[in-house]
Length: 124
Image 1: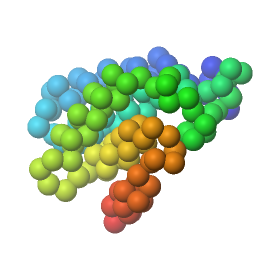
Image 2 (image 1 turned 180 degrees about the horizontal axis):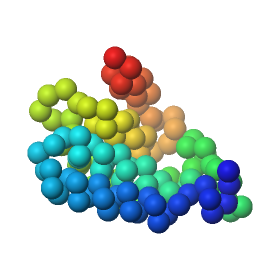
Image 3 (image 1 turned 45 degrees about the vertical axis):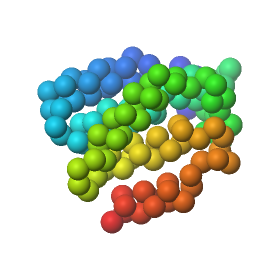
Image 4 (image 1 turned 90 degrees about the vertical axis):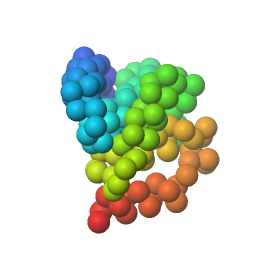
């Protein structure tokens, strides 16, 4: 897929809106924080995800200057909530992986060992 069908901004924003409502209604539920964090951290990269012709751009080739830093910071704060207070659920772990990608200045400085460890948690 490419072009406008590759990314549906309206659906992504609606998912974030609904996740915000869920988190507001269930503030003590760590997985609601993890879900919202994951959605924000992935959506923060949207401007760099496609090229001029609508073609997909690999994470390693994305212009990280196009990433939404405010959305990343909000997501990172939610990751802390999702991971605090006991074993993390799947959304918490996935949001931590997304945060590690978003925190890295470039692909080379990505904390790959930590990402592998988090994927191992998901698989167990």
